[in-house]
Image (cartoon, helix red, strand yellow):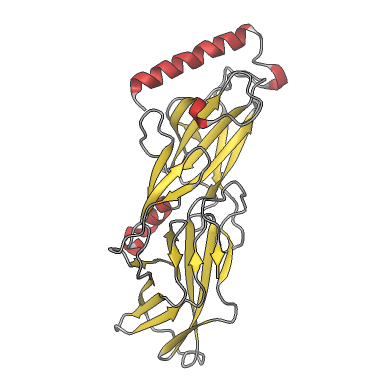
Length: 319
């Protein structure tokens, strides 16, 4: 947002505060609206022990930036549309707001706080955020992987002394784990893995936009210039972030494992998948001498986090 517009919005906020103070409103319910909102943000709790937020994080790192919008309308008694934001795109980092502060305007009306990660520079009245994933997520590293893990959450209610927002995952994740099979079950180590790739001949979706109004991802079109994604090796669990709405057809050689000596193993998907927000698609593959198979547990599909805030435009479709 441009500085001039922010100044006007801030001045308007101060004027509203002055009005509120003149009505002796600031201490109703024990909330002092002269003080900035005490806000805590965290990734939503993981659904299971293995489906962790952003590779194991249960809180944001000190250098993580979260974007914030505060929406308020006089007399509001329900969630306030983001178009009514009086503070736009402030930054929360390491437990405090580093940009324009957020204040309750009074203690009677509903206020809505919209939060998203990672923070992006947005122009005034821009209520959508571009999202992208890398085709080579191993090279992008942990930081690149986590930046592709787009989070979103909201709070809607009257003034409170403390507000906590558990932010849900808007993207999808595929995980691949390897087990030893025939030829590796007698103590022989698995071959050293060079890389694990996901394949889609029709092309992967590499971007889209996050709608701040509702937290849904609108996917871009798939591109045939990216028919392979290299997964990030997280301590021998291979993770790849996908954009919701990505379709992988039945019969696709979906996973390709390459060892350091150049040997490749492929796993063919036996069910079509259309990825959904806040969803993990977990594959445990048994590596035999010369071939690979899915374990008896099959393809496991589960919520990424426990929040129900995120549902996404694309429903999960398993055929």
